[in-house]
Length: 139
Image (cartoon, rainbow, N blue to C red; front, side):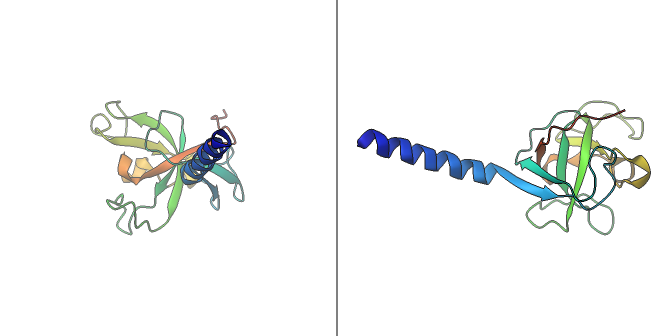
């Protein structure tokens, strides 16, 4: 009986932890086409640990085009692909990506507001990475 109770508590704790770490997001824009289309529903893993080629959810910049410093109060969200991480050079930056920042681009460059206009994005603005469906850049 004690074992069953322990397993039940462990299962309940695990499910609650997963509920906190996983969420779904709906896509409304076209900046990530042809990989992600408007109307798509994606699963997000809440984390700030991201790698090159990950697709991430970030806080929308303020009306002046600055990345937010308080991720708890976003104006909205953007979905973008990480194309460079801290220390890596990027043609549009005067130097490498700063520490604790990532460089983000949309897969549809003509329709994307991203690091090319806004500069490197602080990791504090990252809400997580898309884990389903598995997203790979298409050529």
